Image 1 (cartoon, rainbow, N blue to C red):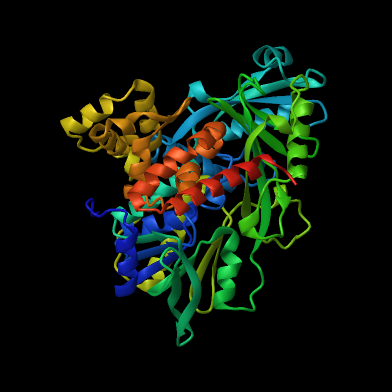
Image 2: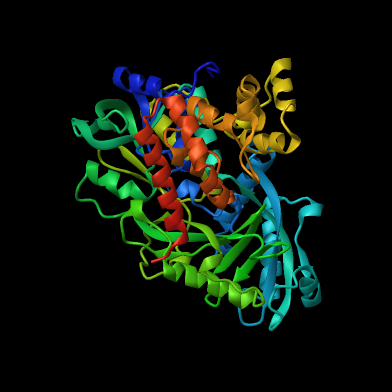
Length: 543
């Protein structure tokens, strides 16, 4: 590992022009960056390109849950659940404990709706077994009276009891970003806003890809021995660049989450609520806001334009009204929303409901050598990457180290030697701010703290009630490849869903800091603010 190599876009673009790589990964979502990290850690020469920002699609629009997926047990997807729980525990306890945290859910059971008490108990017993849960974290069965006592807001009619069980949640976008950073630290050339526009073949095999630097508007020929298509909802678009006649390999389904003020949904617990059709919806309190989701409906529109519509809102409000009848909600209570697309593997039985489509990944190799990975879950990204990179290593016949991702923590979870000055810089911040930085960056929190120590004005919160400081903006530009206001607000900090109202109020201040750091013109700065505020408005309005 080259610990001195920065996460530097310009350096990566220069390397694209001058080097030939063993592996070129297309897509900066969680699967793509995990593949790049695994391959780089084995000593392969790796390039990664992402046409937007890292985690710009599905990987910043999930439920933020690092979980096994209890609902997949009744569908018989035992291998998926077992693998996901194993990976959940690995993330939580070894590789990303600063980003992945345990959380306890209350799962009420109602007569004629969702799972019965026996099915729930049996499923959660398997869940605990697969996770090797310690005694303190094993599920507990509750009577109806105990459920009512814990959560008085729940509907009483038909309540038969419930269960408490543990899972985990994490910042999906930062998990993605840290994989990308670690790939770079291990020698990969990584760039966002770099779009693949076509392929060059030699003797029927892929030899290069035409890449457009979307910032400078220049074209680059990226040469590699193997190409990996990990473009998520756009995998079929990339496959058609290789072979225009291919049949689609993925089915897109839309998942929507609504963000409410905590005062609008004053629940005590994280909840799992059943609808009337066999699906479940999570109610997840985060500090001042509550995230509710998700939906699961087929999507056939422009993947780049997915958004929340009135039917999505009506469905989620309906589930809340059925389960929490005393809490009256309307559109006016919505603080924000986010919508993403799942790229699910096309199954022979195309008539299956979206929620019944298997979530396991598939790896396809074309005749010209393009590897495509589709499907899978956020939680299992490391395992998916290990499987694919093992295939690539065998095919390339190149000397490579064994997979090290199971034992190697992500950058923010690694122990590092901290100077006295860095320790003082972190300690000088208010406790709440210091804890917020550690929760976001782990051991790397000293980097924004160092910036704050150099300029005290950057140590102040950018909005009341929001633990984001100006030093983080500078850090994101210099060390985390943030190039737009949205990069920082949506993916580097999650402000758009964690503190949506506060995000709007601090947009101008963030843009001012980014403009000074990147020499934006006044017009560019105001355009960034206007685009971000328009996006926030769309998240609160439903067509």
